[in-house]
Length: 375
Ligand code: ATP
Image (cartoon, rainbow, N blue to C red; front, side, top):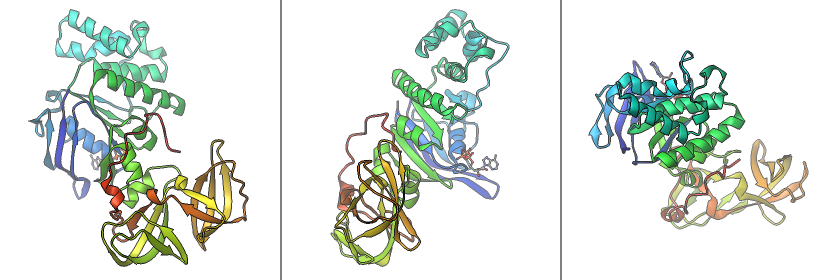
């Protein structure tokens, strides 16, 4: 397995720029997710790493070697697509063996590798079956088998679970991550689904319009979003943004929104008067009688383990709070709102970038236990 290093990668299709000066490193053995909305340049980035698309400029290193101009077949990278095509006239064993047969590998070696791959994927009992009668999950396992049997330097996966229904997808997420841990394989995984990325990734790159907006571990990205785009994209419901205007001193720990004082993590630098956004995740807001920050309850959504309360904070402005189901709350109630100050992110409205606070110098805690999904 190998480290992948991408340097100032740029891809233009005629007048349109799909990927803009992307730089990142996928460490040896890391599960790396490219995450973002449709059309943001994830697949184009992946295809350039795999050698299926030539960059307009920039460099790609695989295991320290510059492979930017190397053909895909010379890169020792296996690709797993969403629309995995199995050969219908071959059985499972023949499908998995296919890439090795194409390479002209010795029969005994092929036999052993196919058996090892099938054991890893727990599909040995399917080896002599026809692929036509397989479930979609088993078909995806066979497609994975065809990738891992090659024992490549790295895996590229482009929304491999996109065609599966929700229940299967969750199960396959777990299987994929376990498989990754067993193989120790460097993996680049493309998805538009934040839950998949949060569940599986060691590191996530959030892309928007061809640009990587933030790179980091799932918890870091969730708790310390670098931009409004990232804060809005991650989390369900997404972060609330309360607009206000202020000049703030260096070290300030409070501001005023409307007439209500609100807390801030201490600012690193003074902020001259300008429009700002007070970013608060739904789970970091709570209802309290004595807060000066007032709101009217517009509705509640009972979710079993919590309830999502929609509140009007000013005419035309709403925010959502995720609170305990035991808190009694009804439409039309007038309530006070309190925020968990340590979890607030302040953004500059014009640039959309977060404003540095002293909290940012403290590393985000150990990664959350895998399998804990927000939303
Ligand atoms: P999706 O999940 O929808 O595939 P994505 O983030 O993977 O989204 P890309 O497939 O990388 O996005 O495409 C990025 C942009 O580049 C899109 O606007 C797409 O239309 C454009 N694009 C991709 N390939 C080509 C091409 N061969 N010619 C012209 N434009 C292209």
